[in-house]
Amino acid sequence: MLKVLILGGTEEARRLAEAAALRFEVVVSLAGRTRAPQASPGRVRIGGFGGARGLAQFLADERIEAVVDATHPFAARISAHAYDACLNLSLPRLQLMRPPWRPHAGDAWLSVGDAAAAAAVLPRIGRTAFLTVGRQELAAFAEVSGVRFVVRLIEPPPEPLPLPEAEVVIGRPPFTQEAERALIAAHGIDVLVSKNSGGTATIAKLQAARAAKIKMVMIDRPPPEPGPQVETVEQALAWLDGW
Ligand code: NAP
Picture 1 (cartoon, rainbow, N blue to C red):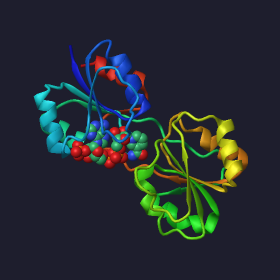
Picture 2 (cartoon, rainbow, N blue to C red):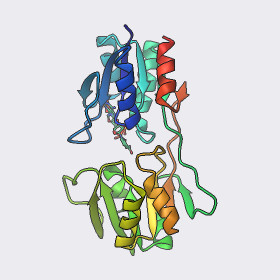
Picture 3 (cartoon, rainbow, N blue to C red):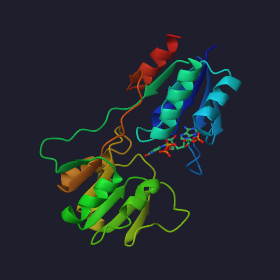
Picture 4 (tube, rainbow, N blue to C red):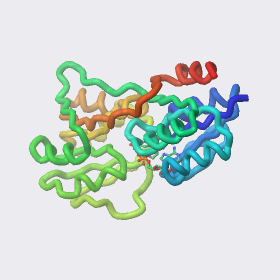
């Protein structure tokens, strides 16, 4: 039976593991960022590998025969490590990456290259920003003045946020459009800041922002690694079936 490593941390990875575990020997790897990760089928290992070399060692030790990189589109380092490690070991590797969100006609949508660029434009375009970029990106907004932040996180932060004026809202996706609209209205939010993650789990914030006619600052994805790439769990399964 083909032994597959799924690099996870996304809903797609969880769904792929569920389907793949019926046909292949599946090992799922999580970075260990959340204290209570969602349960996943297959054998789950948690924590970094120690760079591309550590990952290559793990792949060899475990006799992994194929890798599906189903990490988040913004998790660029682990994807680069997977690319390098698989290239060195001549292992087949696939990137499973959901398509990005696209603006609708009439959206007040501003694309920026990274979190620092989002922080730089904010004072000119909003007073109360809904910051949904994840805990690790918050430091980029530390120097922004004249903007109040409503920060959504999956879990309460282990330490104080690096932002002068911020209110934390805890919530785990998926969210509904009604709840997102209520949150925008309740906090007087006039600009949404988001990574262009794509997918359905967090799309309600875009729909709500669109309906409320507020601005959207969208952080573009880092470029993907070279090599085969698919957008759906079904396509990833078909690729695995080919080995
Ligand atoms: P990253 O910057 O690409 O990775 C940083 C380090 O974390 C990697 O070098 C690796 O450590 C370890 N790592 C990352 N993903 C791993 C995995 N699936 N299994 C084992 N080790 C992993 O990633 P990140 O942006 O911090 O994201 C961490 C995880 O959260 C990813 O798995 C991603 O799918 C998930 N996630 C990220 C985002 C986001 O916006 N970035 C959003 C939702 C979920 P070593 O070098 O020691 O191996």
